[in-house]
Length: 191
Image (cartoon, rainbow, N blue to C red; front, side):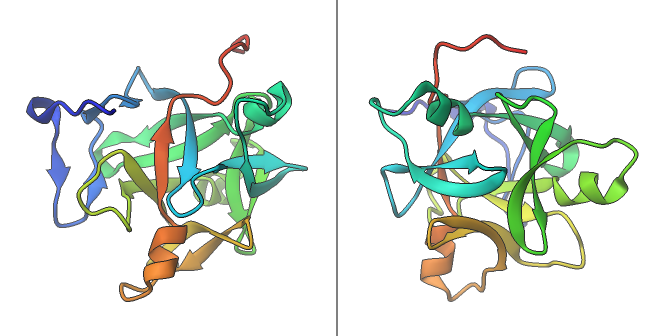
């Protein structure tokens, strides 16, 4: 299903960060971008991360879903700082908008380069999936803010939040793990 090139895989085992030279069938770095990707829930296999009404959600997206729903579930995963695995999730249908946390709720906001809080709240550390210690096709997004140690994007009642995930919280670890997929939408014009 997924091809993993172990010759090009480098993992910082201490911090479990994904390094930018990782090559995985669906996780290939192209310039500053990871190209377009979708992210499926580890524990709800029919649901993808998406934005809806400018909020982060976890929704069923399939072959029969509308093109708009598929576009809402497709993101450009951009590298902010490769040496620290810092990434941002940019919407493909609102190309100046990024997923960010605000009051611990994940939202889609327009980027404002003059606002350091927006930049900080929309930057995450890409890590190996918390619930999948052996599968690099899974990813978790940890808050980059040092004041929020152990906080990850996770779903709760199918809404996306930034929550503290404790090592012994198996449900939390599963809720914060997402499978990296090819884009849900295939017939769109890039910005």
